[in-house]
Image (cartoon, rainbow, N blue to C red; front, side, top):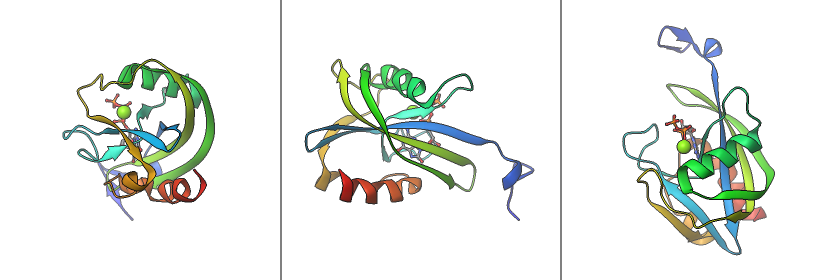
Length: 140
Ligand SMILES: Nc1nc2c([nH]c(=O)n2[C@H]2C[C@H](O)[C@@H](COP(=O)(O)OP(=O)(O)OP(=O)(O)O)O2)c(=O)[nH]1
Ligand SMILES: [Mg+2]
């Protein structure tokens, strides 16, 4: 049995996260997680924690406004998964965003960059992202 902070895994709260696969033609927009954060220094699909009163879609719109200064105007469910990091359990809701308003920039000081699919597949991502990257490779 794994015990973290005095709690067994099953007693831990699941952290629900909305993350955006932002696609424009053959390009995908990624953010680099700041070094001091959990999974810092890795590239990510922009997004963050879903608050208790929010839907996935509402949380994603808010997070993209906060992190990139854009407003997502079209999103659809792409994949959902649960992953156990040694220190926490996350439930990730990956949404495909194909339309947005505004010009993306790193509002929290993070690097933000467009990548081709081929480039994206060579980058370091959090371990939880493995299955969704395989899906992106074959389906998008
Ligand atoms: N945004 C995002 N988070 C991911 C991905 N893969 C992955 O394992 N995560 C994990 C890392 C974090 O533990 C968690 C997201 O938390 P976060 O730090 O982005 O949350 P947040 O934006 O709400 O930030 P904060 O309010 O806690 O500062 O999900 C991903 O592709 N995108
Ligand atoms: Mg975030």
